[in-house]
Image 1 (cartoon, rainbow, N blue to C red):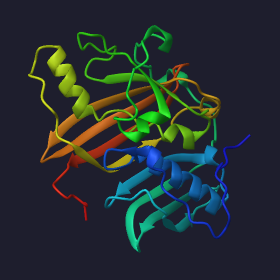
Image 2 (image 1 turned 180 degrees about the vertical axis):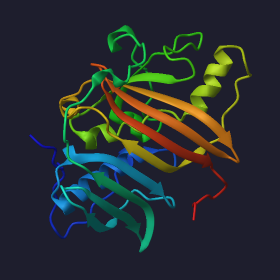
Image 3 (image 1 turned 135 degrees about the vertical axis):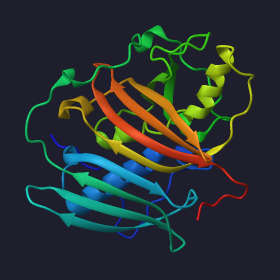
Length: 274
């Protein structure tokens, strides 16, 4: 069975950005990537099981309000296609995404990559977060961090957390929403450095998401009926006020569901990007 978009609305009703997917000053990159994937599957009538990557660029701050999309499609042979969607509010674009489709043509080799050495999710305590004070997106998930009280992680240099959506999760569009669903790596690095005695505890700079590049490398059946997934984040480098990050999302069975690269920058006073 293929993956089809699940959202339906009257033809004359504009979609609306859900404030429940806000992280700090805007919607998460995973949420926008998911909306783009669903929209472009509707437009192309291609199945989401053929989606190999989503490239998202955020151009300016968005509002939790209605939006419109402009969609274009470039098709190649053998059901290869590149679909682009531009998100607009008040006649100005605030984000643009490209979804690349290429159908499966053979088997998979599960030995190509190994998951981090975290224990099963039941081995870790659930995060007791105050969802009224935290970012709205944290109300969408249950979190079980794997970092011990001394700041050590099962994968050195990475922040690992088991995440379970409050609502059921199945398909690439659902998994995409895991990207950018946890604290940015510069925040968790600051906490880890403090716990390991390498630095004083200080409030890290607030950052804004600029770009997310997401690929879906797992076999088709790995994206069906998931429970907990392991989200792993790493901060690679900080330069000129920009933060280059990696994100991985692993299934409980050890399948790499998502590999992503993210770019953020320090937020400036009254920052609207463009």
